[in-house]
Image (cartoon, rainbow, N blue to C red; front, side):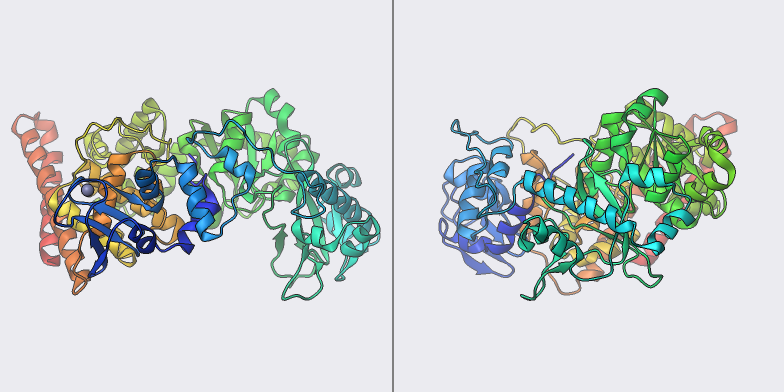
Length: 605
Ligand SMILES: [Zn+2]
């Protein structure tokens, strides 16, 4: 999935342009509360039913049901594709769209002339990739040479058990403790300071002369898959260095989430062993490499991302993630499992015992022992269930929370067989009826897990997508006042929504809000599903009364919970009617549970 492909340019255009004034050129708009109202440009009408919510950047027509964001509006009214709309709006906003980016835009009548990126040899405009690669190469050589002059840096690698051979093989180095070491060195090779700044290896602030980014740090060059240096990570040598690890900023060469340290060396090893080992740190990786374990790579201190998952998948369908056994390590493992789930990889997780990390473990116990441990790595699903169950108190509420926490993983699984198996495991471990677990998933098993794949744009069947009135009220509140999402989530998990369309929208809202802290990307997240987009736009322009809104939200949530538990109760009663005697007690217990939940929602009202 990559619904952010239109990336920065789109985002910047959105931020710079006011939706109301762009739309206002085509439609006479009048303010009515938080929205602007006018005669719909897309169908004939005498009374205005076309509305714009400028804060949220969406429009919707209650007459013909068309809706979307600024880009959809321009596409629709100008009859152009996404790319043209983006270019028109970018010109107006004064946002530059790099040419290569223009060519890569999806779905848009690629012009037959297909411009090539201009090659100005780096004299005037931005540095070319080749120039940047050259600069990184020279910088890497400089840092490597500087290591020889720094006893402290040499001692650091020695103390971590890194051999001179490994230092050489990975070009480990040292950035001297000055302000212009690298700049002066590269100047000697004819590189302008401006170029070094562009590569992120020097910093320019407030018009002052540039200075070296990496100072008094040991240096780990980061490479692309061809082994070319594209960025650096530097670890502070002073105990009080802040931050402890400093990375190159992202550049035309380097995207933080697109690099796994050492991956370029792992190709053969992965092929040989049939799986890849992912560790957390540079040192973990280097120690394994030295010990002869060559099918590993390191996430290099950044949180695990989907880009990492894509990378892994290119190399192997099996991955073992190794994490520290402490609380932070286990949480990181949980997040990583969730991110990898949609990719159909066979993922195992090894949580190391005690305070160990792979580095310390291998140095003390050796490679053989480590390989032995790897064999005990648990399948990700097992690991997740174990972790959450062990944190739970075993009460019905506790079990319920465990299921809630496991559902995002279940949804993310791309393989239906694997998913069903996972539900079985949950039911067994929690000793509850499997159907209860499946219910939480939201009934229809074929439902697309959000985030698993870009959806096929559905046929415009003419029938608009709708949700129930109660669900509509609830969703329009949180979409219009995203600050309330935090409290909404506290009382209502998406599975409680019996309306699957509403459940889907609510899940998307939570994901986007988690990711961005706002809902600007909500329309984008609807992918190519125009019916979903229309519906979400409608929720965005719907009038919401702001007074007592928090109380109103809680009331809607109570009603939604009642709806869910009433339906569940009816199911259980039906089951009770002709169940074997052995099942009876369990079903009664479940009935009591529903009753409790209903009572609780009563109290809340
Ligand atoms: Zn209309």
